[in-house]
Length: 80
Image (cartoon, rainbow, N blue to C red; front, side):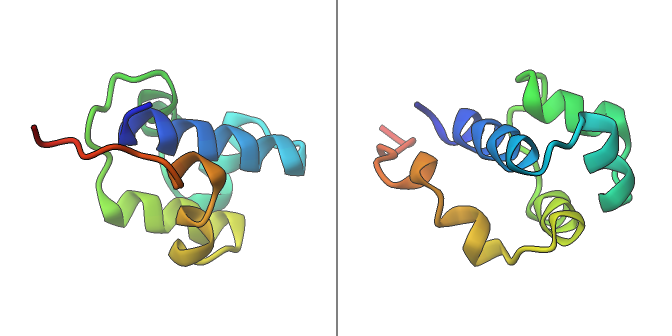
């Protein structure tokens, strides 16, 4: 799994835990639904840290909590 997929999977898991839709996450985070969908469906290959921070704020978690998910535990180096 690459980092982009790990970010998308983490967001999906966190929304699932809360019973949130993509629109609910977007509204809570002040991020457009199209931006959230771009991240989740792979159109955004490099979501910015500011956007991820805004999503974390909407989810009421820290960046540290976000990146402590299982999805990030075994990521391989992206630059080869």
